[in-house]
Length: 281
Ligand SMILES: C[S@@+](CC[C@H](N)C(=O)[O-])C[C@H]1O[C@@H](n2cnc3c(N)ncnc32)[C@H](O)[C@@H]1O
Image (cartoon, rainbow, N blue to C red; front, side, top):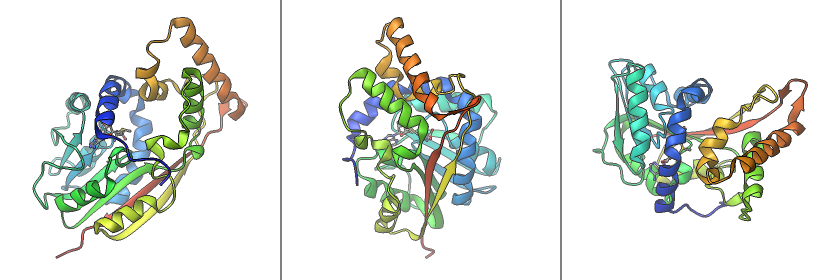
């Protein structure tokens, strides 16, 4: 695997600092988030009446989409390492009148749930931050009911998702960060088959991987990248003066120009979904 395993305390600290930005942008990002959520829910086989565990829920994706799909006779438990993220989810669920969603602070490597509690376990863009992914997958298998399924979404290689390519390189250069991009935990499971092999080693059956490629066409000059900048780097750039911040914003806008065609930027995004089943007894 290209990058070392993340450190749990560093992750908890990093995500705690990011939580306000994630909560702030959750509403704005909701429609785009749902374009990723629906294929994940389809792959997991999420259906009416199920009991679902969402790991590393962040600001509530895909937990809120799951709550809508399982309906009033189903239930979703949204979890995260960072309590500040869970506060935001509760507020979103209340505003959306979703009473079939509850939250629980949980490390995905040591889940506070009984064996065989859930029909489905889902995780969107979270497993890459776990220091021991094998342990996290074993825990998911433990809490699944026999015949249940887990479905996890991860990013493909960094170079396939334009927004990250531009923001990572521009901001890191601006901040003088010399560490190699390959060390970024987000892309740990970029190589094909890398997460599927962890599912298999943990004891899942019928493990399958699918690739999704998106081709976003945001309006040029619209500053569409601002939510992602704030969510990814807000805590690292808040010390910049207003002049420095203007300079950074202009540098980012310039960096996107190479993807411009008429009034839009032609971008790509690459995602993998890995699924695995728990054998029926
Ligand atoms: C990239 S965000 C994804 C959030 C959400 N699922 C989404 O797709 O928008 C990663 C989340 O993983 C959480 N996280 C990191 N390590 C974790 C762990 N060991 N157990 C549970 N959650 C963790 C972070 O707090 C953060 O909310």
